Image 1 (cartoon, rainbow, N blue to C red):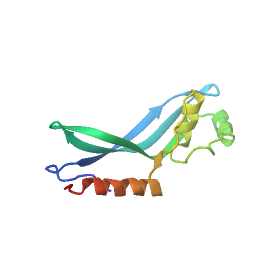
Image 2: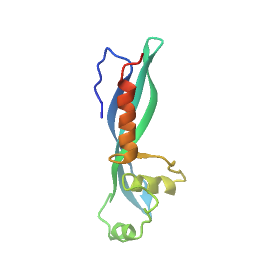
Image 3: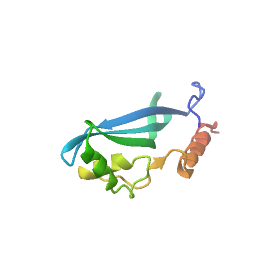
Length: 130
C-alpha cells in the first residue's frame, strides 16, 4: 500500500502504526490487553493547510496476558467467548464489552479483502486529479 507519496502532490496518504494498551481487571485480577493496528489517513489540502479527510483503523492483532502468573487466568481463558470478534481485535473487543462499550461493525482487518479494497482506494486517491 502507498505510504510515502510525492510531497509536492495533492492528496496524500499516511500510515501510522499504533499500539493500544489497557490493564482492565477481569474476574478479580489484572490483565494486560495490547492491540496493534495502523491508522490509514487520507490527507488533502484545504485552504492551504493539510487536513485528515478520513481516518481508517486497520487492526492487525491483539493479545491478553495476566499481569501476574495466575492459574485462574489460564482457566478463565479456556471459557472466554471471543467468537463474536475478529481474531485481530478479539481481546480488545472482549475488554471493551466488559466495560459497556461496543465494537462497531465494519472494522477493517489487515490481510483481508476489506483492507485490500482500502489500499486500492488509497492508490486511486493518490492519482492526479484533473
